[in-house]
Length: 249
Length: 267
Image (cartoon, rainbow over all chains, first blue to last red; front, top):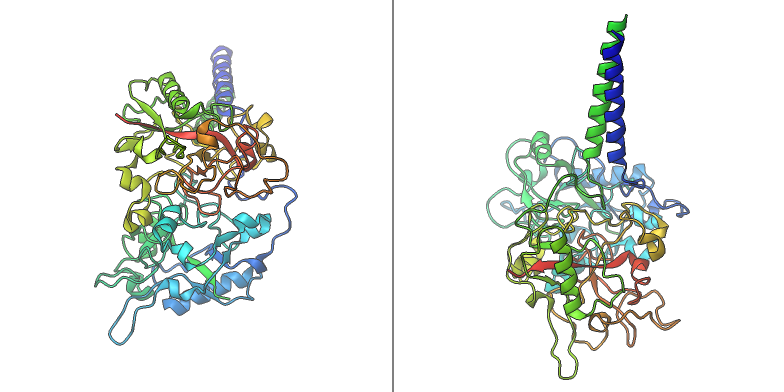
């Protein structure tokens, strides 16, 4: 009876040791971009004028319209001490009879916008998400080719955390609701790109961008259409009903 | 009693082995993929190592030879490899545009994933294409050995800025690719140095002339760089984000580069 046990112990030890050795490769700790370097100045959320919502509203594409989305931005900002700004969600709505379209780009002030984390890290050259609307949206060809400073490591939530994107541990939440075209304006065709102007949690579709700029190209604000407007539909393709919030002042 | 202990032992063994194997799955930046060989389709990669003399690559010919050598070492020497680098015009010597040196595409990485369909897709030649972007990103911008290039905050080690340290490890930030190019893949025409003197200079700027600025300036050795992970430098451009602190090998890590560059097969 002791012999087989000894074999098991030996086998187990050898396998485990070799597996651990293989996994080693002298890797230094991976910080996932969340931890600021030692000696960084303390967080200054008051300087933050841009964030990705850490959570969605939870009802898919039904955000309670633009007003509901703006209120969500404000509530999340207030929770981290950044209520001293007027916050707007980066969302477009499509034209309806007697109701003109609203372009996301027209709702967010004129910039420059700063995120939480880089303000915290004290790196002025990177602190900025974008200097102005033209750079943010790539209004000229060179601006569009180059891209703005909104990328995975800068597009953080109001707690300064990176949004999990392709290659990260699930759940992946990089599909950010915008309802907008690349230029930040509302769609003008008859199809639904805004979950019925952010009131539908069932049928319809919303245009999304990728906060990590990975997936169907590298657009932050307009890469593909969601499968539907329910929370489950958003989650099925790597979303969570998150959206971008900008301070307009 | 012995029986129970044995089965508990086996259970413990299985669970810990399984979790260890699972943990080992995640390929972290700089790490080699286990047991994987380059896709036969690979005709694009990021160099896994620099030439080692800063911006002096031995000109375009030296850079191309570096691509070829690295490719050959992983069994991909059956292509003609060119470095994605521009050179600037000199008296009696026209400029060379990086985009004119790399064939027509489509280009695929180590895993056989498509980076770009053609030159227009790679560079975003139209407003629509530029906004859409190509498929080069942190997870596709792989070296010829299949490594993800360590980028912003992957390891957050201050020593990453020090070549003496950085050259001793695969796990330090090194995401600045030499290109010497504008966003459209063409050479600069402004008369300032964006190519470390057409990839022959390993000089540092004269003391006091650098002041931390990453834009090209009169008389300052400099190379334009881009980010395969699209993260950093104020815009995240893959081929034209900003300049360097100089052309010496030790200057490049100061802004998280090492003198790596993109290689494309033209056939």
